[in-house]
Image (cartoon, rainbow over all chains, first blue to last red; front, side):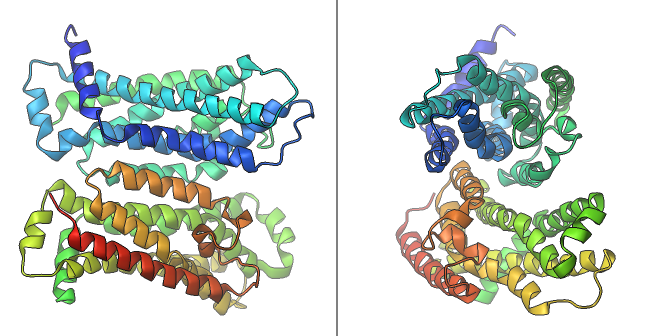
Length: 242
Length: 237
């Protein structure tokens, strides 16, 4: 474990000049475009939540779960490409440490996207001249809850990304399981669906989707599945033949 | 020559699970719609009383459009990913075979797989309608039009994704772009007619679907030719 920060540093080094920034700003950029196109009445009460749910719709329902898969596959790319697993694991590092640092890097990158997204919401809100003061608590809550809710999903995606050498393979599974989101999150089983959790946590409560899940329930389910998926990932990487 | 290249590409795809992907896409779309119809059977039967088949096809299409765009992204990436991962571009291009053929073979393979997926989708729609008891009054023209035309109209996106996947070593870039394109396409119905993303929906101001297909095919051909020129001059690693 003492070497953890060194593995972490090595992971970051591998990401340099990989056009990662481009991937991170894409979704907030698209959300901003949707926000600009949306015909918002800036004077009406509750203009901020309306703007947030408009912009968070595509971002949280589809892009966030998909991005967690892209980033997980991204971080395992070099290892799969050139016999990197053998090289990395023959160093005096623990497999658990490798898993943890890869996980932390992906989670951090996803947090960065969330913060950029929040910036985009603020920018569009001010651009449209919304009369109400900025509801910082609601914005920060939405962005952070969305991030917390994608943590189990990252663990699940990481497991697939480590297991399969093909870059697109884990993503194909991810895509196939993300598309049902469009319907699943409207049903009462949505909170048990890892791909649907980020959107349920991020969209304002009681909005047009009619989501009526208490945040406590959601966080309880998320915490449980997080522990489960991380343990599964650790168990797998420690036994994997490389 | 192209046939030989195709059979080589086919050989590389065998026993990968790419066939399952082609199978799972349509099954997923039909499966979700059967859940939708199953859960709300009486409500939907009443709502769509006037045109049961037509509305089923529209409902299937609503999910199939983004699914097809995501499928294009994944197929393009999987097919070229084999070469990138094994770093065998140099090897393939060292063979006495033109770059044009190599590129076209990969492109044709994607088309073939998409054709299979479209066929499965129309078959699945028929099956679902039959199980739900919609009768034999099937609008064949509309069914075939809604299943195959979106594929033809999506040609610019297929050409773009093939080009991006084949020329980028880093597959995260084409895949992220593909995902983004698919998500933006869900808002495409409100976009102006010149947007290529709108064409697979077969909606345009003159209400003639074949216009979307023609613009799609011709724009696709232009992008395909440009990417051929680029690939023929590109340094590979």
